[in-house]
Image (tube, rainbow, N blue to C red):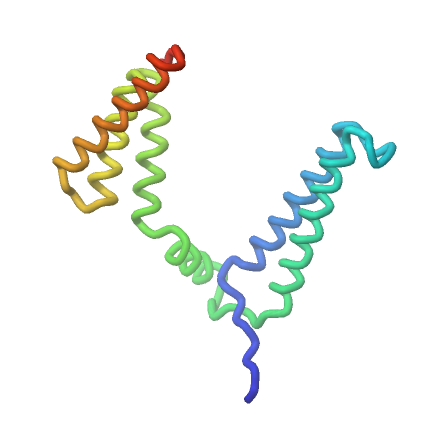
Amino acid sequence: MQKHPEKLLVGELSFAWLLLALAGGVAVLAYRIAGFSGISSPGAFPLGISAILLLSAGCILVGALRKQSADACDWLDATRQFCRQHFPRRILVFIALAVAYLASIQWASFYVSTFVFLLLSVLYLRGGRPLIALLTSALSVGLIYLLFSLAFSVYLP
């Protein structure tokens, strides 16, 4: 029985390089905290974690380099295939809802923005059941109000 080598997913190699770069950035920032003067220095734990990140990212990159190349013809085809696989319409709509929600908190209150966001999210993601969406959103916002405003005395804008 012959073992077939794994195929490289579209964007996998780029992601592995990005992971390695981010792990390197974490290592630089960890060193800038307090350097490394000894095993009990303030920078020892962050440097140890960054070493684990670098090692993990390196292993992922080596694994990706050993795979066969993806089935994409050129970079435009690879980009389209990547977007189709990793950013379906549901995800993009939800991201747009989340960005609109974060922007609306500034001019509408937290509670109104949260209610509308939850209502639209439940309607879209659960397939348009208005009564369930309305009840879920109202109950969630009511619980948030009770918890933060009454129990913790925290003002939410």
